[in-house]
Length: 203
Image 1 (cartoon, rainbow, N blue to C red):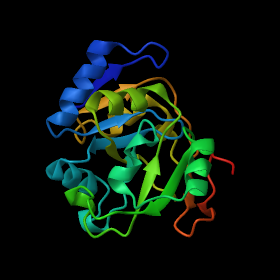
Image 2: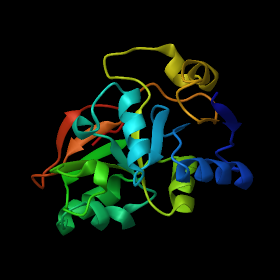
Image 3: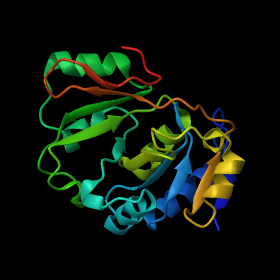
Image 4: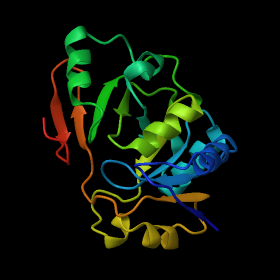
């Protein structure tokens, strides 16, 4: 059964955040709030957790394109090839925010991402995922709880989310109602922004 943790965005309870960190370090799956839709997350360096996340999304891990959730831009060089100054400035002016930026991947990616030419980077404008990543010490892998072709009311209500994912995840963080608009996906691999999916973020 999933454990529901009521964590307040304005004043996150340290003991509950620590429980989330412990779960991630033990290979668990979480559902957490963001500046867009509630999302699934796991430890990016735990291959078994990544496989569970892929199974939950009904896809093979090698075919998955899970976003990398950061708390700032300091982790970029861990995952991406060197970034032009103009691209970095562009990222800095739009993050934190409701965007997923596609960048060229480097060769030192976590095992679950091996062979990927590109990766999607997110820095949500929400204190809880930022705090989770900060306390964990590294980014998490993530995917929205719903697919693009689904319009489901449960995706905004933490209680309904917990009901649906009760036996599929370890923790559901309840921080109140979420949004129902996904992030805007922007491809920056050419150096110029190309919108792949228009979502909440406006370029």
